[in-house]
Image 1 (cartoon, rainbow, N blue to C red):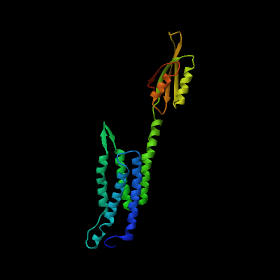
Image 2: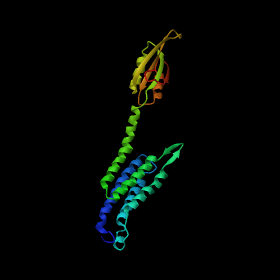
Image 3: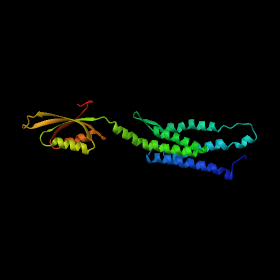
Image 4: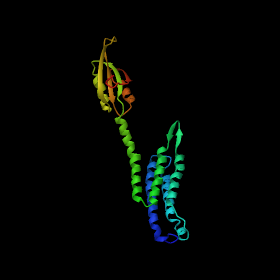
Length: 239
């Protein structure tokens, strides 16, 4: 190989550099849409820069081999990229009111650096697979976690006092089910009222739903015939 790679010899390198730009830009676009601290330009530059560093470490010093006994080690440059990218990632992480922000974005920059290194090494399929894995984790896992949280949400206990004999309990159950709450258990306690000799009752419900129970309590309180509504902590086998 000649002392410098020019002309057609550089075309494979441009393909690898272009692949790094494309894949890192796709990842950066996802961060940009989510309005994160590091967006499209940051991720694209990191991806292209790391790919270029790997290419330079592989081909930039070939003329040295023609007149010296120096042994080149491209992997040493890659190792420095892994440690050096931590400075950018560290600048993206900050703490606000005891809440840590920017960890996912910092990890994404680290992944983009790895994608750029893979492209610079000619491992384009591996780089593309890693980019796909990023979208699976960043987008798909978010919905998966939300689904698991809804499935694992603990049942909510609600106690409702109402006028008996006016169809109030039927309206209560209809409202709960129409708002997406499943009635797991129901216990009714009847008691006499001294107010106008009207009979009242208290029902204890154990519900499971996807939303916060506070909004449901407000709607139940507004039903005609409902005297009082309160949340309670349900026990494992009832109230």
